[in-house]
Length: 148
Image 1 (cartoon, rainbow, N blue to C red):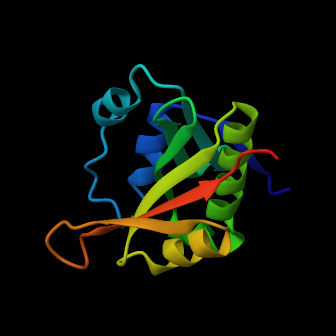
Image 2: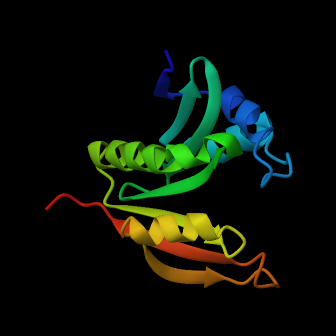
Image 3: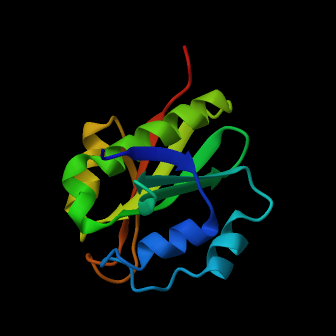
């Protein structure tokens, strides 16, 4: 029987998955992740198919009210199963439970599926980071998750 599960994962899980995600140039190392998360309230979510990690989503606190969804990826053959959307929903739920009011995220034009998912999920464009070209520049998004 096929078993999908979503768990809190490790830095090693991130590195294992990103090796099979073609959009990454394998620049994500355990040291890179550890340095980025150091001293912050952070969450590493991992999607597994049976026991194999197939996707991840990593985020951390920017301050007491804002959570930054930093990095995520799904192995291509599992993308049609909405793994990224499920990881996003779990991350949002965790951020709400931990008292955050907003989630911020950046993406790029070269990842149109991610841009569509963010907009369809209630994220609003709030900024633009010019990195010298339209392809490499980042579009900034924010979503209000404060409980009313």
